[in-house]
Length: 82
Image (cartoon, rainbow, N blue to C red):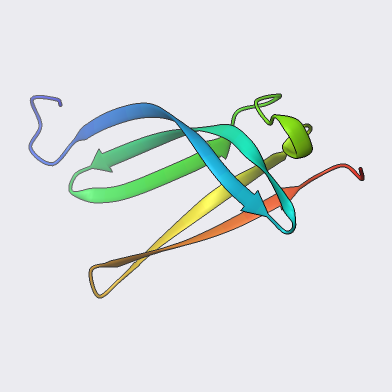
């Protein structure tokens, strides 16, 4: 938090176990939450080289849409061929 009301930042790392297409395994995301003058932004990014197993080589971003207080996530990603 800062001395200015409505301005703050946080960072986090999360390990995700998921199935992307038909490829199950895990990967890590980092995300940054930023509030500036009350306007909020959230960015999610796959940590490079964090994919394991069938998700090795994964890269991408996660988008969060907050509609009527319900979170909807969309992942845009690329994976090398097996």
